[in-house]
Amino acid sequence: MSFVTTFIDRFYAFLICMSKSNTKLISETEPRSIGKISAGRQMVEGKINLMGQVIQKTDEVWNLKTNEKDFCNKLHSFDWVDDLAALGSAEARRFAQSWLFSWINKYGAGFGPGWTPELTGRRLVRWAHHYLFLTQGCSETNLKKFNLLLAQQAKFLSKRAIKASEGLPRFEALLGLIYAGCYLKNMEKFIEPATVALANECHTLINGEEIVFSRNSQEILNIFTILIWAKLALKDLNWNPSVTHLETIEKLAPILRNLRHSDAGLPRFHGSYGDVDGQLDQALSNAESREISSIETSIGFAKLSNSRTTVIIDAAPPPMGKKAVKADASTLAFEMVSGQRRVFTSCGPGYLFGSDLSYVSRKTSSHCAVYVDDHNSSQFSETKDWLQTPKKVIINGPITVPKEISNNAGIGIFEGAHDGYVKSHGLTHVRKLKLSQDGQALEGEDLMIAIEDSHKKQFDKISKKNNSDKLSVKAAFHLHPNVLPRLDQENNLLSLALKNGEVWIFNYGLDLHLELKPTIFFENGLFEPVKSKKLILSADLLEYGTRIKWSLSRANDKDLLVGDLF
Image: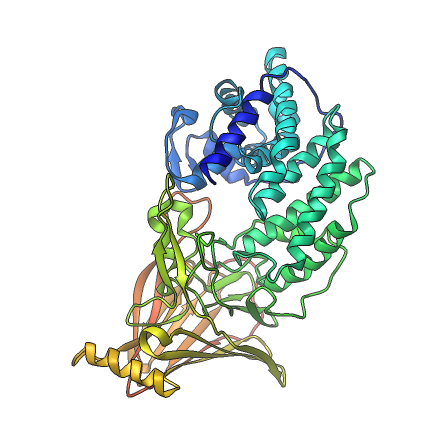
């Protein structure tokens, strides 16, 4: 966000907050944003964790100073109210009201970092969802303050919602304006301009080359959820959503179904943290379409699915440029889920635990991918914008990523390649994955090869720089923290035990070297990253190429109970 945009937002917020117009909730809406009871209980007990930032219950939370933008957004959007409302106790209500009226006293005059269109939209929606929870038992004076600020935020959105950054932020701002029109007294005039603006954003979204530039499946889900909530809010007031609005819902629904793992979560690439706590299925239940996307790579992900096993592959070039602050160097990386249990996964988004860990999680080696001599398949560089915190973005990455999905007698087959190492090493990565018809076996073959004469010259150049050292190719397989590995080096076997009792056997060629190393897993809502393990298969690059073959098969074929055994 530029300095000029920030200044204009603050200017409008200050002017509007000088007005004394009032409102109140005229129609109660169900709390569509559902939080975690466990997180709400932790907050009440003083164990407060927002985007990896741990806060003490005694801290003056609104006086905290931090450069962590994700933490600031979480705090000022009031998303955390979902968790306290899920708990629903009297103590949880007092906690929420304490933070709420402290915020009103400090920032209610139009000051502070929370006065952006997208955060105001998110905040107004949460206040509408949990209006009774937030106001029950409060004094008449505080109730007037709360209702006054609802009116002021609605007016602010009427001026600034359309000026929010394109994409998810603008959808968030417009949803807040629609909620204001549908549920607040004397705000009906905002519905028509908000729905027209939302239709325009939908038109831009579905007619672009990519559904969402970031390729963050969590962001796609959030936009889809916003469109569902907007549809439900408009119907509460007997207002028909636009045709474009409804068409966009029906276009996004099959894409999200295609991105859905068998555990009802999403892939953990490009900033998505995978675990969506039922948000995906809840949103999809409100879509008319029950189709699954026939264009498996419409947003750059390919999927193999048989029986209760899903494999999702990042099969497109990564987002690049200044906006790609969460993009991963994860081309041709994959994740695998068996039933309700994740087996192979990415480390996930490190930004959940602060900017220091963000870059670590975005490296190629933090995914189930193949890399050469610890190099990334994409090149990162640090932005140097004036008055903004430097961030790492991808400036060069794979350009050509051919892929094909086929089916041979029920066996799902993915074949893909990328040129991310051609410029640096003269090497092309070719990956082939085969999922058996019963979903109980996954075979993989990775080839790193110099194809053209110019590629071979580049390979020779790099080889000479290494002198006598050989170039090494490594294939990483990150295990979910709940997977227990046991290595049998004598027989080249590794067993992977899942919590539900399943055991999978990982096999590999005798010419390969296997290491079991520590890694970390970034999970939303935890106080710190979780320790886990990763498998590293390595091979020396001989002449102009090398091949890594591996397989994973389930050891027991009987049906297992849903419950966990350990």
